[in-house]
Picture (cartoon, rainbow, N blue to C red):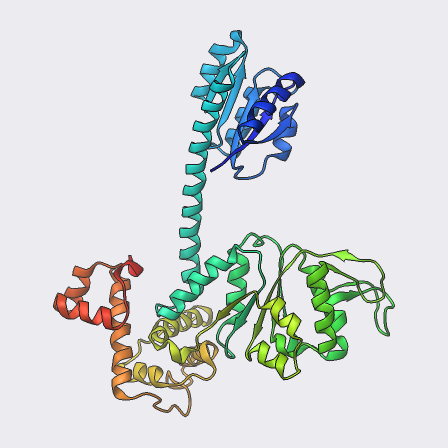
Length: 441
């Protein structure tokens, strides 16, 4: 339940009296003597109500109302009026004011009006939140492609974790899309407008690692010409993505741990502490705790990074996503290269579905691009049948069901007509493949 109230009145006695009444009733109150101050400190999606006098020096209550309406037409503004201002206040309600109270007003009248306004504000903000979630869900589905249960669970976890101020560890094989998932965690969270900084720990020579991470002052070491901002400092306010974190030198792990604990760093060659506010998303192939037990990684840092963990399923565990991903990569390559896309034959699709894909999504993208370029069959070289015929048939059947449900947006009658299936057989297949109609609506 919302309880925030902004009070704007140039009379100190009224501000004090209203604050006492509202504080005793459990409201969180902010006081301003001028409308200009209120507007300066008014946050986006303010979770409460504005209570303002009409006649004030500088901007009047009516001018404040007009500016609030411009910023957020659904933010309730209650006006406090003198007897002579009642016709003006009635007109203001037609222009968007929530209510007006004529001075002197009783505490009961004020509380009743505020509670109604706060209830309305709560419904509006909840509606906005649900709309934003739906928008994010649609955007995420176009970024993390797949209809498999594993991908659906991953998208749900990403949306949940994106808004939380916790470090995340992403586990996944080479080419499974770890940086893409990290980018989604950043883009769909409150740090989206701040920097997303990616650093591959395995690609930096150990002797340069500290300067890359922490930056340096001019002359800090031989060849250090000029000041340089490190990745940690550059990511201030945003997200630092540390790929292949298991490759970070032990000496730098100690210093990174200190930054996470104290939220401060020092550039090389400087004694000045710099405050940093950032979120760490790390990615790794091996289990960091096993690496720690083997003495190759600090256990305390592993726990710091692994507040929440996401596991990316390898492509061989979500074969039903292969046709959709291949189609996406092929069309992207065709658009980029000015080529056309030839549809897959049944034999080609079968070979794609039977491959183990050790390079995961990255390997599939490469195969799709080679197909568009006409450099070979739409399959990896040296492909081997990794599944039984029954398993391949099951994967193909699941793909056909999902493709039809997607095309018809969950319209069961249209799917039954297209696939020429009786309803009972269709229901049995849906249950066997773990499919739900709601997913495709």
